[in-house]
Image (cartoon, rainbow, N blue to C red; front, side, top):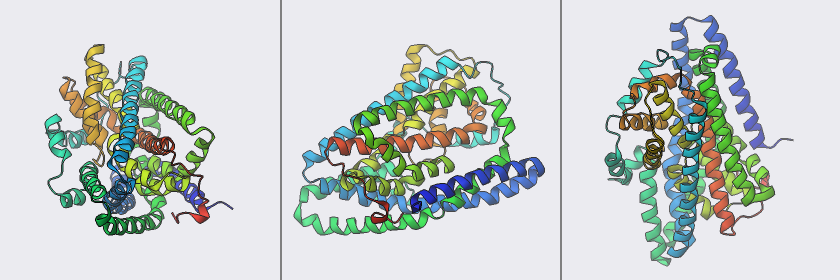
Length: 423
């Protein structure tokens, strides 16, 4: 008999298939006004699910990261584990950006592209979020003025910064801080129990999101018009997956398929909802069940969600240079490598920002004299690209966490599902 995790995955995929079918029928048989009205109502299902997840993220990141740092013990251990994590994050980010750079230059999907096709209203929405996006604002945004403000806004990077300081201070205090750390540990387990309840809403969220986008945009026009763009993008994603899984096999060996089975449900949710953030609580639970040390998971995974979004980073170079190709803006190799370094920096603050990759792409285009309104060209297909890059973000962070656990000799045998978490 299939276990609960596999049943949830199956129901999520069934919801996605049903959403595509119903959305297709609506797109073919209903007026534009009716589709727009129904799509807005269906999106409520996805919004409810995402809000339930967002409700959990801030307390979970704070409690797990503080407990993870404090339980690592001495500050030398914190530095060693954090150093290994950052080495993975920087290396993975660099290769992700280079893969996007390689495929967009090889396939040249923007050459001969029709500029008149696009989502002008969506572009205006993204541009409005980009007006003040620059390096100075990034660093000003990095450090919270108030942890309560950061938690209220679900600013993951700011919460991570505060939690690191808090956890290091607690580790330095030692015994006097133990009662508080124990309380936060209990609190994190309560939040993780909530994960199981929230994930029961995932199929409804998936159904609402998929039905709305297919009903609004259709299937045929998107598939035909953007075939070259989407095909080149998929080649980039497949190359990135091959690299990540190849490195994962070198580190984990025969345990890699087991890891992929464990995170199948988070991958399905990320793919269907286009939100890697939505699966953060479930991913914590599944990595713990796979055998990763809870202290390592609690420390590495929140950092990964701020510094290690591999799929999003690959897409940023791909989309930025695609827009340059569409508008005939020549970029030398030196300029493209400079763009890569800029994206390496600015992308580190995008976690939790709606349409985050597009915001960074728009800002980068403006910096390199590429018409930023070109973002309208990729908006009609961005939802489908976001499915794959969100799923890639999840596999990248799962591999980073398991790799550091293995390097620290803290990777245990997997826990049977029936004996593990309820999720």
